[in-house]
Length: 400
Image (spheres, one colour):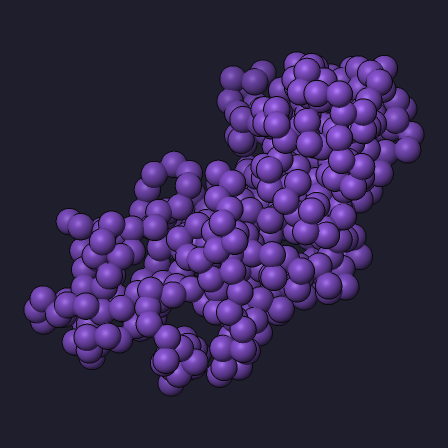
């Protein structure tokens, strides 16, 4: 029996009394992945990206482990909810236009002490001030540095279009604007290198493209390390009591951790290890989050139909954004139908061994987005589901 077949038998035994569709997190794999992130971070604390987890119980679990410190959130409403729930170090990774949220933040001492907001433009400071509604709490601020690799005088860009702040001088100029402005305190810098951390460099069957990605990422790491170091020095000249410099992501933890300018590493997807993280040479994780769909039809030889399944991941549309039929091994989508809204046909010889009511196990393409489809996660330890916990959705929150 292969390791994957053994996992399937274990998942099926543990959930035999549970009806699918359902979502499961293998805690043995989750904890092993957490240990691997800490090892690769080389002594620097790992800040957990909540969008890649979207479950308070699992955020609490990982933050209780040595080597993890703080949350990186994705909306202001989520940040405030986490602060009200007892999390005391929440970095909002994206600028917000949530005026009601800023009014709450500015009037709540506990939230203002726990939450740091992201800015990359004076106009965002203006919006916050206009939203205060009399709240006088000092707002903690983090600046974001653009990390994209730009070649040929900027005519070629590799990386996400995020912050307009690219040079150390631009970052320092905004730092001075924050320092001059009452009601704000600059506490951090963030620089997320998504073109390194979030792009696999070992694409199956594509050796030339994989080598090109590795060459690009090596060049990007060198360029960013120099520019990030200069940016941090420029900002520290304005704000010498800067508390943190955040960088990295699951795919670049061990590289970013070597930079002296970086004080903490961000990661989240590496806890669940969705299918998009199979294509890295730098690390190997264990799939920890899966979902099961029930077989409801057997249309013919070599075909079964499962209920549901149309759970695509965000990003540029493509086959790599679809969930992967994972267990039993050997199933594939019908190219004429793909993953369906209400039902999904699956092809392959393993279909002939599946009966009505059997489970087919899938891996989502990305991490926390799985939790937007399920109210609860069943937590597996060994051969037993030991706990069932709500996702954000199960607690009544869909922040985006």
